[in-house]
Image 1 (cartoon, one colour):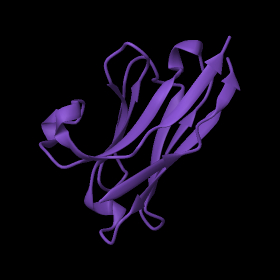
Image 2 (spheres, helix red, strand yellow):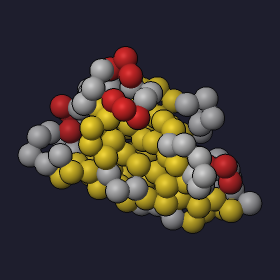
Image 3 (cartoon, rainbow, N blue to C red):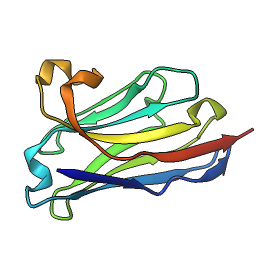
Image 4 (tube, rainbow, N blue to C red):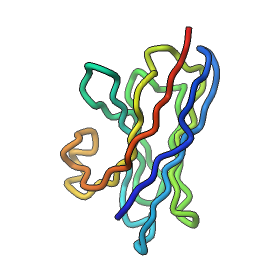
Length: 125
């Protein structure tokens, strides 16, 4: 499974940005629960949001709850992260990932077996 994350860029604090993750594979997107992680310089990679296989259930880190929305279009094999009211602390490389391990580990990096290459989001104050 190949994942391609794109759509990152520069935005001012308070602005919005949507990043996407295309799944380049014969296997449909609906086969995997998926997530967005992010990693800022000098920090650990952390989960931002997770979405279920069907797209009906989602989870958000406290730091982005109410500002970010994860969604998935299984017909297009694409996942999205809509980010509103962005803050400088949101600056990071954002990675999409497909969960291949235990669903109980959905917030843990180790549960994800497929990763995109990352897309950089920079929020200026």
